[in-house]
Picture 1 (tube, one colour):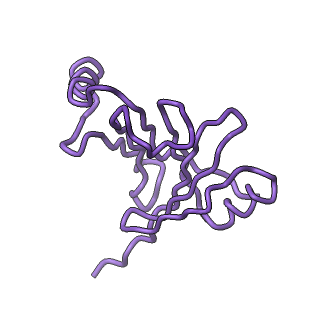
Picture 2 (cartoon, rainbow, N blue to C red):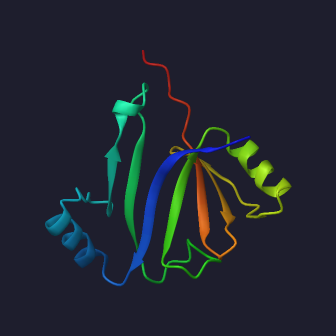
Length: 130
């Protein structure tokens, strides 16, 4: 059985990204970067040193979370995206047909029973050094 390996990211909508980023930076110490989010590394639990949880703000009118109407989306790290999506389909879950492949890895989506969009992320295979 496929299982998630951890939380890859937490994303939420807000009406003023700059003000919200400043609040989180100034009040909670979130190391917000120019791209509008932060990455919290947890390399001590990952021998390859590539594991992190991303925290990111999205514009209030983003459609990236659609069809969910919730103001947030959680990204879960998975080992094998294709196997996880097949398992979810076999279990009768509502799985988005779209899969994104890119420099940051592979992404797929499923809706939970309450209408929350869940993003599944398979990190890219590390490139050999040298």
